[in-house]
Image (cartoon, rainbow, N blue to C red; front, side):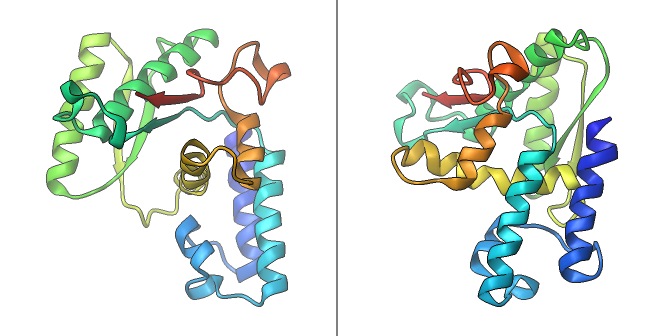
Length: 205
């Protein structure tokens, strides 16, 4: 599989090349703020950012993102948890994507970042409710934000650029220019970067 054989190895190699070990957690905020080990000389830091972009560009993965505009939520939805709304919409699109691959009946693990005991309990209950109602074959995994998971780190790296694109679409966004070619879209891999709205990128409302 591409993720196991290529993406995970490429992320590990990136860490070894710059830090000498692979225990580093790639948190986008820490990288941008140049905190800790990411406080590199300007030239090295820029090369590091470029290498992250190249890693994303050269690896095969599909993005399904949901952006909730909390400032524009209808009154009827204000009481709903925006995180749960995004989860429900994301699971729906994930099931659609798996259906295209004829994998919709296969057990699929969905990893969420832990947010606190109460929040995790509510999320688990909502996840199970949605999966039961829709007959989704998904299994929940709750992982610490400090887990050295390549997939979670990729998700963290792309979240802010996607949000920035939604809030400020006219602003230059080099990261999004790479990410948009990873969105689940119409007509498959030969049409990446186009017609991903409401498929790989869902915005609500």
